[in-house]
Length: 239
Image (cartoon, rainbow, N blue to C red):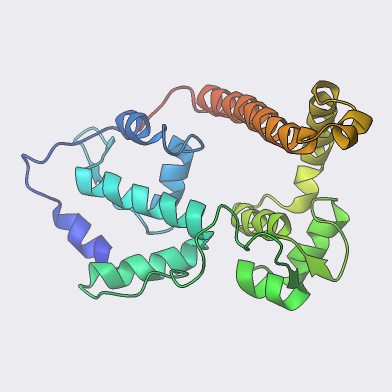
């Protein structure tokens, strides 16, 4: 990428430099799933080129932080594969003004507008997945079988595409399905009975909102446990 050549010379010595830990502190409030491993992965894919200190530690400039924020935003809001993000950034680095990929599509929390769905071909095209990966996801219970696919299916498959690049396939994620069912059981215990939801005006809407809140809290617990485990795995090394 063009950025690689620019990074070799590096910014002026007076430019502030941040460690991986400091970068995480700046961005984790907006991107709680960000880890040092993910930053290294972006670097391996040629999306980032941080400078190195004399002792070999990565040092990030404010421009690097802005670039990371842009990458993460494109992943989160547009569900773009890293290859597409890299091609876009490469054009930006060369002084071009490319159209933001997916900018003409509605920017919603999911890949599809509420109520829309896709057939198999549309799902594969939207997510960049192979048919084999989709079949594996269905076999693992991560995506339901059928001829039409929902926004959640598209989100799941796009995530599986990224995981597959690291050698993590759907078969490795079967325990996540079991864990999700356990979490669903916890949520169900808190919600009012189905009969009450049908009889009370607005009960269904309130239950849906509460279920979403509980799901997000349980997701935070899960993400935090994984981050804690990753830190232990890496032994606190931020090189």
